[in-house]
Length: 185
Image 1 (cartoon, rainbow, N blue to C red):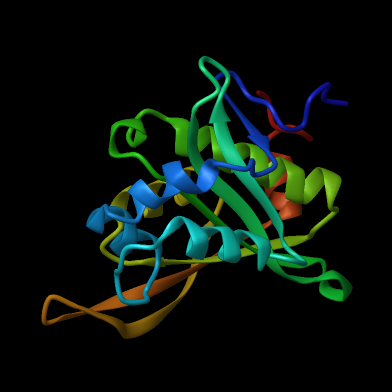
Image 2 (image 1 turned 90 degrees about the horizontal axis):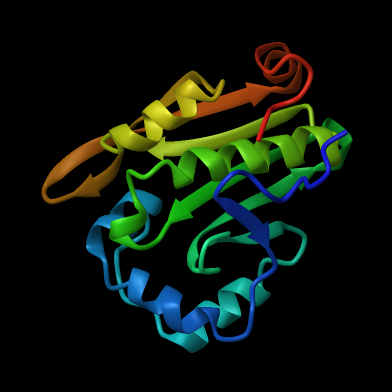
């Protein structure tokens, strides 16, 4: 059994804190972040709007990602759209600040949230969707056991171009096999 299911070598998953909205509102000024994270139109969000979105995540397991060194807020990880009868959930993660991307924090956050989903919540399946041009995210998910299961063709319209959405899934038995029964920190 793992001593701390919310902690890896450099980050931890924790509950949102009062005041996190201020840091997060800066992320919503970053067009790359917005256009990689979601298919909705990119637009800045106020601290109040972010606070309402966080509070509206009822029924989801919504975490903030913080560094162990300095306790900096760097992202989020969530399991939502849970179907307990089918043991499945949908996963979403994001690293907000540009300087924190490409540092391996997303990989650590993904490993933690997958371990939590499969070992703590006893889910059998995780789903996610990623925009086809988000190669970093696609590669991250593939490295961590997600399989491309389908394509929603030409579903995203950005800069006068159409882009596919890649549908991916990960199954607990495959994850357990890849991680020798449990993932390491």
